[in-house]
Length: 285
Image 1: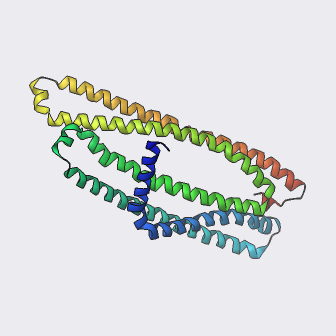
Image 2 (image 1 turned 30 degrees about the vertical axis):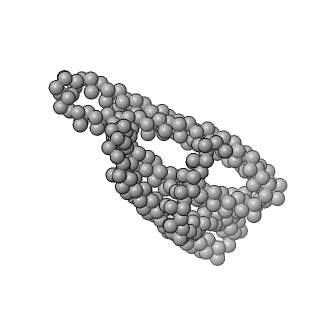
Image 3 (image 1 turned 180 degrees about the vertical axis):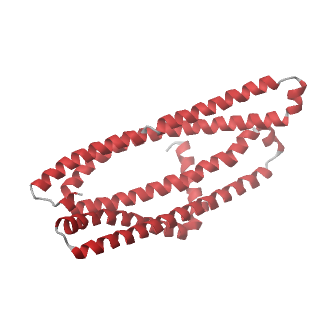
C-alpha cells in the first residue's frame, strides 16, 4: 500500500470515528427513512399492475376506489420519509462541518508566527471555508444520493423480478451501458473541481494581499497591475466553472438517450410477451 493511500485511509478512519460515529443513531434514523422512501418508490411501481389489469381492463369497481387511495397513502409516506432523511442528513452534515471549522480555527490560533509568515492567507481561508463547503456537499448530496439510489434500485429490481424476470435480465445489460458515461464524466468533474479549489485559494490570497498592502499599491501606482492580476484570476475561475458546466451538463442528455434506447427495446420485448399472452399489460407496465 502506498504512503498516500495509507494516509487517506487514516484520514477516513478519523473522520468516521471522530465526526460521523457520534451521530450513529441519527444516521440510522435517516437510513430507515431512506428505506421507507425507496420501498414506497417500489410500491408505486407495483401499483401500476392492478391499476391497469383490475381497473382499466377488468373493470373492477372495488379496485377503482382502493388503488387511488393506496397511491395517495404511498406518495404521502414517500414524501414524509424523503423530507425526514434529507433534513436529518443536512443537519448532521452542518454539525460535522461546524465542528471541523471550530477545531481548524482553534488549531490555527496555536500555530507559531513562522507558520503564518510562510502560509498564504488565501490558502488558509480557502481551506476553512471552501474545502469544508465541498465536504458538506459530499455528505449531503453524494452520500445521501448514492445510498438512496442503491435502495431504490434494489426495491425496483425486486418488483421487476416479481413481475417479469425476463425483462429484469434485460435491464441488467442496460446498467453497464449507463454506468460508463457516469464514471467518465464524474472523473472529469473531480479534476476540474480540484483545479477550481486551488484557483479560488490563489484569488483569495491575492485579495488579502491587495487589501492589506493597499498603501504600497497606491504609493507605487500599482492599481492597474493589481487590477490586471485580479481580472486574470477571475477569468480563469470563470473558465473553469464553465468547463465544469460543459462536462456535467452532458450527462443529462446522454442518460436520456440511453434511457430512451432502453425503453424502446423494452417496449418491443414487452409487446411481444403481451401479444403472446405470456404477460399481462399491467405486468409489462
